[in-house]
Amino acid sequence: MFYLVAVCGALLGVYALLQLTVFKMPRCKSSAKLHGKTVVVTGSNTGIGKATAMNLAKRGARVILACRDKQRAEAAVNDIKKESGNNEVLYMQLDLASLRSVRSFAENFLKAEPRLDILINNAGLAMRGKTEDGFGMIFGVNHLGHFLLTVLLLDRLKECAPSRVVTVSSCAHVMGKVDFDCINTHKDLGLGGSTIRLLKLYSHSKVCNILFTHELAKKLEGTNVTCFSLHPGIIKTEIGRHSNLWWKIILAPFVLLSSDVESGAQTVLHCALQEGIEPLSGRYFSKCAVADVSAVARDDATAKKLWEVSERLCGLA
Image (tube, rainbow, N blue to C red; front, side, top):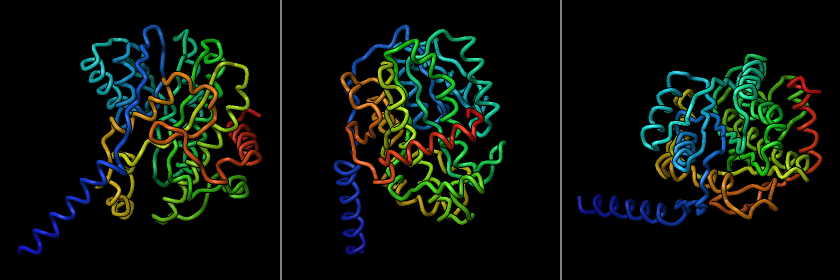
């Protein structure tokens, strides 16, 4: 019995030490106020997105929750209004698994909203299936939907410059790659339906997020619009809520060591608000600081080709 208690005590000690060191998340230091500014946050009815939207609302921004689920989004709007004291928080319907929905959102937004100062591409998932347009679900939502959304809103961002585009990626990108043959042949980042394949597809999509930001920065040179990608940390979110039991078992150790969603929002907020990081446009951040990426994720030729392929798949080319 004493041995068991000692082992449990030691494990708890190691857990506490990890939480205070390796997994401790720094805070966004920006004191920026956002009165008169408009921000769009995708996937903001829960998790990191909601925590980000809450913080931005408390700073005085007009915050638009761009989400698929109307009921959950409206509940989040009410929560944010109540806690922030800011009534300039609203829901607009956006289903990133439908290019038609992305176009509709952009059209409605541009008609109704004269400003866009910050676009935060936060939504993400890890589930099987196909989008409305026949793309792999992870590819379609995590990359293509956000790609099209950003391109359609770029002119408004330029009009309101200085402005920013922030895309939530992941350290999982180090396991990813871009297989253009598979994209062209199967409209997906990879094949297979196993749980391990699901993890690989997610990793591939996170590489796409970083490559997209890398190429976007080049196209935005001289516009006073900057862009950043980031790893939010190992955060306890609902990203795997639609996944199977094996996926949840694989994620269990990470959930145990994960931080809360408010901590996960800090690097997002840093990239959206921190003064003086404009010269770092196109870079990847982790723990509120610039971080290295895999060789694939910094390859100029791959970034350029992904942009061109994405344009074609979204009907822009």
